[in-house]
Image (cartoon, rainbow, N blue to C red; front, top):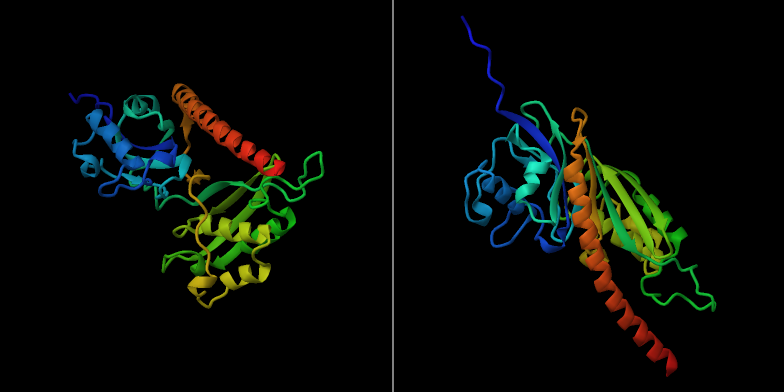
Length: 306
């Protein structure tokens, strides 16, 4: 007489991870720096899933991989990590040993051999650019208080349209391979001071998103022209003095990662935990911003009175 097979104790599971990247030196583990991956692996060590080490020396579970390597300061709402996990490790359980700046909120059981990096077919980033419209004027008809950051929306959109489509972005990354990408680029103005730049592709060379934003911002501000964008996209290398550095990392968010055969289920309790945690962090950031805004406005008034 044969016995019934026991329930499988492990499964290959992919997790959606949101994090505030401002306090981390990027996602990927690195010596002498605290990263998001360290926080995740430390949580797995506390759960007894991997052997405990010292910082980046934590072991990784079988099949462990992540969708992307975000830079220091970059945040995410849908970073994806997958590995062979015990069946009891739900997003809610995962969060039990994670800091408030890192929250797991959804999961999908996937086939053995699933790889979070290689199986992703599309990645989407959003950059929240502080960019008052040059057409925005106060009731007095005077120019916006922050002309240094103001952009002309039409010039901005024309520049961004140049990057849309299939291009070799070798002049906008330090990577030497994988520089040809079919980029979907769009922008939406939110309010009078914010432009959300959304870039999507099957993958991104190093710093490409932030360099595209920086280039488009320069044209929108009138410090560069469309011919410069065309030069950046040309086959010939651009000399350093004509290149473009990356925009700051903090406004950048890894917004989505698509997998054709993964159906993610939201863990309501874990998602609510994430919403509350990020709500608190947003509140704290607004309080800090209010203080610096007050100082700025007081100085502006002092200058105007002279």
